[in-house]
Image (tube, rainbow, N blue to C red; front, side):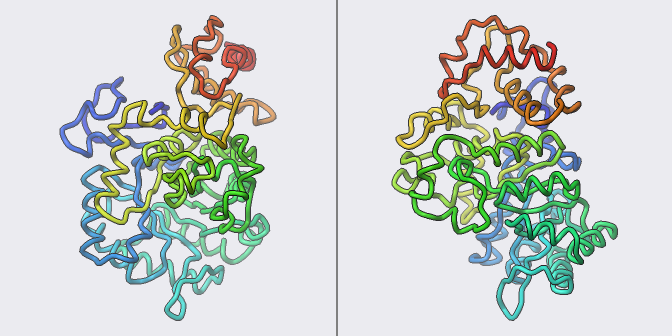
Length: 414
């Protein structure tokens, strides 16, 4: 995995330069890598726990999956579900180790008349969130999420109304530590980041969704392949812009739907007509700017094992770029996906990181100070490029790397 300054190994006593997985601890948890969620100060495991499948499991089965997560050092759990029974199962399971868990809980998912509803009614949302706290045996959640906003108009209504007043009230009371938002629409995510009201977002990230234009109807993601026909040329600019805005503004991303509901594992169902593995999907999400953690759903203990295999996976096993570049229905020629295939550079330039910082910088009217600072902290900068183009021969997407290094050197002055 391409490491950044957001990657921190918390467990185990690793040497300062030992950021490679699997070489410094005695337990499974010692292999886990942690990233800060934006500027919250919270360090989340790069593999998290999306708990929605717990609705169909017994309390004992849920507890077994939670114990397995803890065994591997997973420390971020998302609970959007309103069903009191599933909340109790998860809450009871994490209660013995509550302080080690980062809990991501949602405002707006309510249980009414025995069924789930999405609501903006302050009274219903208050009661639902208090219920979540009670069933999780806690007096706060770390990340209080404005639940499921896929329309910019709805976002604008929320931030001006009593729903947002409720979120602020819970924040002031310490019942939530940090405010977040969940969305599948990059334009909503952009609006949230620009508003300054959120510190992180939960967003759907995978190669299939990244090629689609903004949507307001979640079910469009589950449409037949013809919906992807006009969008298979590369990452949609609105989504690329969201990632850049989040990185530039210190807004972290936690990832849902990294596997596209398993569709990407099946060549017949994938819009690209080729299959990816769980490890490749996880690596794709974790190479997006600002992403801190991916939250797969686990139906069994074995599913936890499958996700955590990412930590020991080889570069070849993580390689989504070559697969996508050769896919029958996919072409991202000329577009850097920060996959790291260009490495190693003969003069030591971290080409993928330079490209990422350059893309972040040119997306803004002026170069953000944080981006410039990060670039200037690199040991080897773009100006050191010799123009040998060996990296270009290794790039699956034929990015003109030498030319881009010149642009980066001119932009940053080094």
